[in-house]
Image 1 (cartoon, one colour):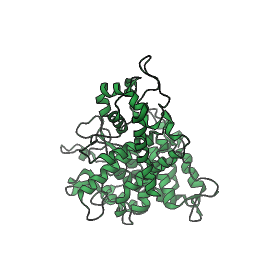
Image 2: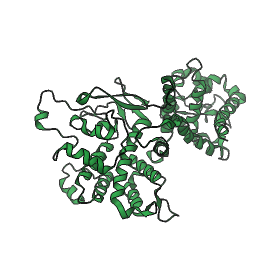
Image 3: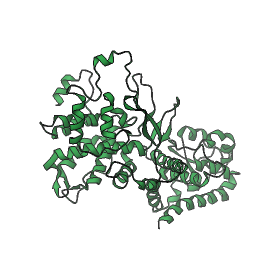
Image 4: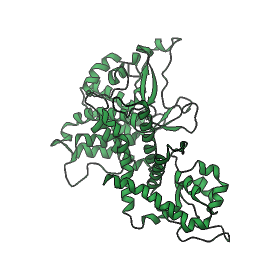
Length: 472
């Protein structure tokens, strides 16, 4: 297989692990499963394009594939088997026609148009939706969801079936370990590799649909260069071959609840997920994605491929990811004096709690959004400008800290709190909420040292601890 790739790879591209994995899994389907292999390949290739919504990556004449997999609405979650899908779909595509193929006679027709996709176009211009993770990492999340769903364990009960760390360099190793050492319902998975591939393929597609609808994306609409966080579901309008996709907020309500309730829950979920996203910048530690996808699969996915009313509790499930970290934080010795070592999730979650508390008071903080503020800043500086004012031995205390973008941190430099407040109003007004609150509470650096910082710290710590108390 590798030799063949070397011969045919005229562009000199490196064979990726997920390409090798695809070939290995297809091989497990056997020599007499051509239609299943083709269906597997169609699903795998569609899922591998992480930008946009997976439904839009199934391109076929008259939307044959989309209708069979996702129903007339294009947003049902596939629940049938790989074999049944292949038996229904592949014959409709024709022996020499894959899911994206068009006849030459169709292409040269003056009315022929290709479908717009939701990733990048041929000119590398960004279009609408962008995923927060790449395909190899998504495969690892899907594998963990599959392990959770099928209750797979290691044949040696003292060993883990898969590493906690999400490592794309160990993609093939992770799958091999599950296949060779996994036990499902008392049976070794390696005794029926074909069943593993069939079941995992459908799980992969289901997980991708859930990922698209309930895990935040960056949305670039109205020629926006910066984009914004969004949680949206794909819908269609029109009939037959004239169907066109459109997107609106994902649904988080029970039957009979108001649209306003859904808008509020959707906004809350966006804020919570984006707080997690900017806190865990490495895809290797985005375990919160696995947790949410597992919960959606286990609790919310009905047998008919619909999401049930338990989705109304989604905010609580997302927030639990942050609350668990808050619990761990307060178990650390001297946790309120960690300075730059304060975990980012604590400060980001605190910003969420401030936003939640004050969002309805005169539309306060309505402009706030979570960004990659990756530098912990001391409001009262560690090293005051020489000869200007005194150093403070409590600069590392929690009340004196917030998150900033690194470029703003360098601008703040070593000047006094009241000087920052008066000279950097635009930066503060766009900064983290704790930064804004610190600026609001500051009068002079002496007052900040004497009592303002301590008062604010007590208030902020109480806000964090109240979430722990609610669960006890």
